[in-house]
Length: 473
Ligand code: PFF
Image (cartoon, rainbow, N blue to C red; front, side, top):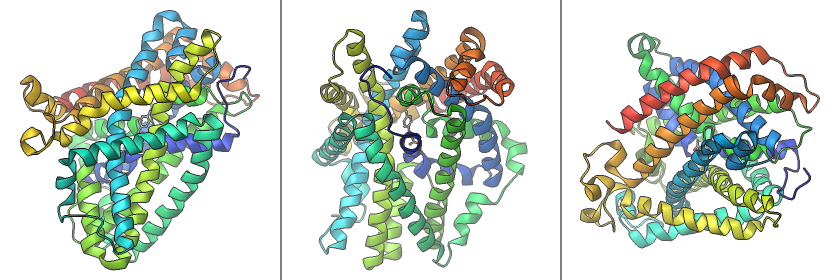
């Protein structure tokens, strides 16, 4: 690449960074529970089929657009055709919406990691039994740890592509994997762990017959958020990839690795719950209430603190490698603009500007105490209370409101439009030319063409409708 935007040092570095983006909170608190509650192995089968049809296709489309244009989301669409620049803007908007609340959650994970570390050294890491309820209404704490987590992002992203994101991912991802293996093995040795594996894996095909549409939409929504698709993240990461590398191979490796880690997360979390008689659940409750109880009361003592520290540290790594990719989508937008004008990228400054904007945009998601509201001790009310709206998932707290806009609307729409553009406007040839630019033969061109033209738009339309109805329910 002739300009000074930056480039991955190696294909492995790119893969670790891209898998790092994909593997995040979605894998740890979303996948295990959704899989278990929706038919176990039967859900997994649907998930795998969707990942093969839709995940790999959108991944390839985004990587190809990014590498072909050498630009982030906005610049990429602008250079393909000016009139589609808005698709790129939807991606950057999603980046802003998500990176804030993701960092609020990352801040809580950071607090838990430090809590268990303090416990390990004999200090009091957690002030109360029901720590989560106390913490989310503790505004200085929530905002302070939100800021600290954002600062970690700023430090890494301002270090650049190979010197920041890649360097961090190359250490963090193997560490995450190793810790996950340790936790899985330890949990497997606990009596009663088998209940978790049963919940996760034993297929219940009757769910497919009775509630197929529900399983389909849950799996599809989970799949594309978990793969960081639909908001130009992989366009941005693809734009730093050398023309030598094999795009279609990479588009398969990333979803496969993400799914393996999601299953491994399930094998850590669910058996731990069942071994200590905890209810299976999903979301923040699973991560911050159930798992904390598993470590402090179930395992208890030194080993509980050690495993608790290791577990939250691995979640912290997963959250950081995802949030840096979100911040990078926003930062790349400004950097591309400067390069277009012939200015130097000024990456450090641009990262700081975008992080500060993202921090301010994300503040309400911390200040309403995840829906605790002023009455519960937070400093701000949720959207329902503030605007007198009916209470539904999308208005119950600011985090869900932002998530509704991004994951519910902008991202499925972004993936759908991209697919339609490749399938019907730019043409599949654009993708095959880009794949073959590296000298690798593009296998399965026909398969991808059918996916871009028909399958992805239909699945994404289903996700869009399903997300909107569930957020507004
Ligand atoms: N894939 C991340 C997760 O599973 O938690 C979330 C995410 C990161 C979504 C980056 C989108 C994105 F661009």
